Amino acid sequence: MSDSSKLLIAEVADGVLNVIINRPGKRNALSRAVLAELRRTFHDFAAAGELKVAVLRGAGDRCFAAGGDLHDLATVRTPEQTRTMADEAHDALDAIRDFPLPVVAALNGDALGGGAELAVACDFRVAANHAQIGFIQGRLNISTAWGGGGDLMRLIGVSPALRLLAASERLDAQAALGAGLVDAVAVAQEPLQAAVERFIAPFLQQAPQVLRAFKALARAMRRGLPASEVRAVETRHLVETWAHPDHWQAADKILGARRTS
Image 1 (cartoon, rainbow, N blue to C red):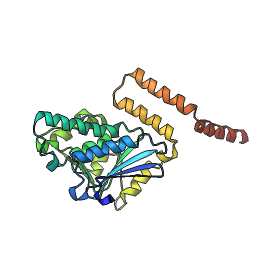
Image 2: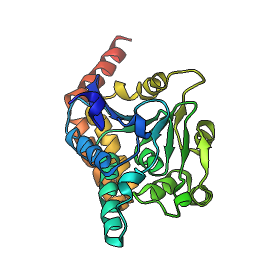
Image 3: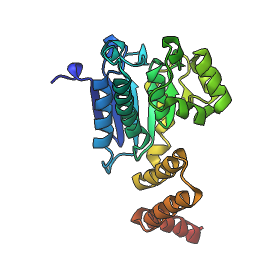
Image 4: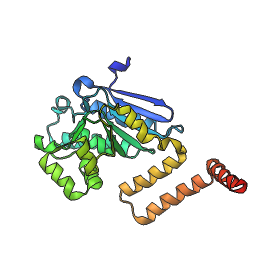
């Protein structure tokens, strides 16, 4: 199967898992098949020891993801069908939320509706200068479906998030940056890839097991685990990273430099 016929393209290079939603002609709309592929891909790569970060983007420069695929979802009519669809899609986004390394959404274009939910399921968002993000589900007389409403409220606060949802407002990249909804924006005429590479460059200086430790702590906080469980997660990963040869190599280097200074 050629890359052009794949719904999703996943490639690993230099410690980065690059995942591309490959439906530019459909504005990278999220069909149930695309969501299933996202779930499978992030599950399949979760144990890859060489990885340090994942980057998710859409093909082309028009849309990151223009929401759910309305043609595909037109057959979802009954409450039972709706619950099944929502559960399956939520599971797909949970595979991203629970991925054991940082996940960056590279917003190559607009992230709307379900596409905005996909974006906030990631740990970070880096936007092209022309990109917009909007939780516009209300325009279809529906609410958020896949966990994105809660993610949005966690990111920017309950009242600002409620206003965005209730107004079905689309934010341009700079407004989203100011609201805390995205973490970085490419400067005018700068390729998005350059902005993404600049954003993840510090991550790539870290050891994989250290990044996994930090992400585990973030996952515990995102889930709202009790303080005792958060402490257990942090301590477990400290023990693992402290005993790792990478720690002692770094510590010995610093101690050796002090001895010779």
